[in-house]
Amino acid sequence: MAGLSLDHPWAFTFGILGNIISFMVYLAPLPTFYRVCRRKSTEGFHSVPYVVALFSATLWIFYAFLKTNAGLLITINAVGCVIETAYVVVYFTYAPKAAKMFTAKLVLLVNVGMFGLILVLTLLFARGAKRVEVLGWICMSFSVSVFVAPLSIIRLVIRTKSVEFMPFSLSFFLTWSAVVWFGYGLLTKDLYVALPNVLGFIFGVLQMVLYVAYRNKDKAMVEQKLPEHIASKLGTAEKVLEIYAIGVEEKVPNRAQEEQEEDKQGVAAAPMEKKMKPAEV
Image (tube, rainbow, N blue to C red):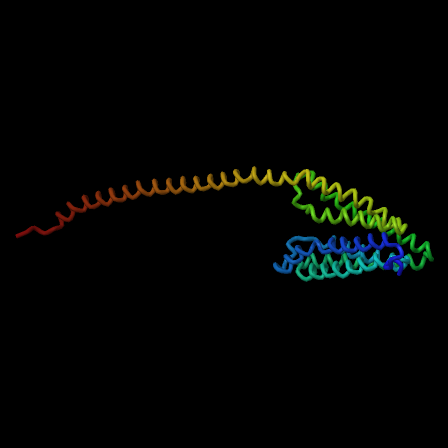
């Protein structure tokens, strides 16, 4: 294919870079799934992002097969299909029963039902260049919806003033991925690849700006919470000592009272013993 040749060196270069960076993005969840395998639990993680990513990769492969000179789109999305399938399988293995049922339904609905519907409608009701155009619009619309998804994370960062749930490395690679694939789409005159990545670049830069703005907030919050945490521990220790002291004070008088009562009983018992003792001869 021309997409894999050096006939267009700049497009080829951008395509190779896009493959490398996108591969790193696909591998980003590996630490999460390593922890899932080690602990044998999904720990509340959701399968939706991985099912959606699998659907997206499958859709772009279908588009690349219909379009000429799109070999580099096939390679990276084929790798993406393998990786995302592995993630879904691992999730399904260690997820609780309810999550397994939800994941199975989602895979059947999105990856089988929705993709099958797009496949049949595209092949039956479109011909030639029109088929590529229709599928290109579908892929572009879905890519836009995927790029809009980080809005929830951005909203969470602004509300909590914490970047705990937005790793900088992932935002960095997503931004560069958008830049490289925009260049590839522009050089190959494929607007369906180029246009969605404009939005991806904007959201990626916004995430990195927010990270720089709020990264020190987490440290400040930790420094503020640390004295309170220590103070609470000290307060608890003081309360324990206070309770212990009160307990000791209560026990000491009680012991003294017991001794006094024993002495009284001993004094009272002495005359009785004298009375009961027989007279000496």
